[in-house]
Image 1 (cartoon, helix red, strand yellow):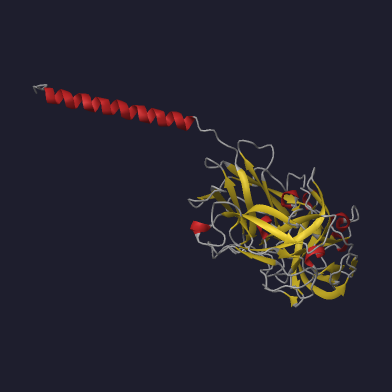
Image 2 (cartoon, one colour; image 1 turned 180 degrees about the horizontal axis):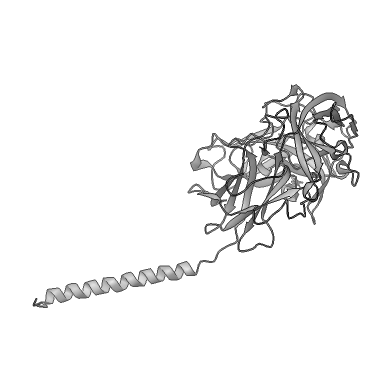
Length: 454
């Protein structure tokens, strides 16, 4: 049997160890208590964007294989990337739901199209923001379709992001397209003129989509072509045989005559006349860290933007946001003050900043205010570090329901026939299966120089 002799030294060691153990336990219990006291602040969306494949310059178009190999297009990818930045003090608990929509973006109330069990995912790839980021904490990415999410129906689609802790309403929404080619689409763009309300160039564009398809398609069911400027998915221009509403009348300041003629087997034509040509996009390049430092107070643009009448200096990026050259440690947001010098011009409309930093979506959060003292329009906003394209729009904004009417860009930007914007046309067909729905059976792209084969 071992015989321990407790000396004064051994007692001192025992008491020291006991005291250390008690202190350690108190620290651990205190840490757990503080962790339990953390109040989870609801996640806040900072920015969401969607692009084709892994290329941020590509439109958010998914191609699914058509039955007839004659009708193929190079516009579109096998998958899209949904990317969103979140501010949250703890890792967010979110999920995404997908919704098939009509050609004018009304969600279908059809369980065959929008099966909640098949079109929902929480499989989000999360990454942390750079250490010094103040505006967001986490970035989520979803690439679809994948093993879990399939899109079996062509057409317009929305994605909505929900928080598990508050599923009453989404805090993020984006748009994308699923195309199953069953037609060939060629777009012709002609120079034209319109009657501007301001002393700017009267340059306009008339566009015609020529659609050729199989005789198996029902003639009257090929009912709509929708034209978009690339990356500007919140500004559709409808050419439609559906007469339930006049789609283009309220949203835009100018009126655009539309025509439909011909037959699908020989070439059905969808035409819209006299769209203002607009100007080339202004460019905001935030790659210079010294000019656009992280943190601190707001950064005012080096020079105020001037009212334009149709001139531009640099070639733009066709409306895209470019981040590929931004290193991770500086992939953050900067609080920027935009300043527009109206050059003595007064307006009764709301002046709205619109660009790649807000998905080209004009809304109440981007309305500029007029500084009476300096006589400038101003707006401060958090902008993701990137090379951006943007314009100044004017419109009437209903603050209560955040709707836009009387939208135009010529008041502060002017027009030029050489802007070179890409237009994308999507062709819609009313399917008869599954209770009926709008599918996209063709897509084409062109600019003033001709059709684009990507």
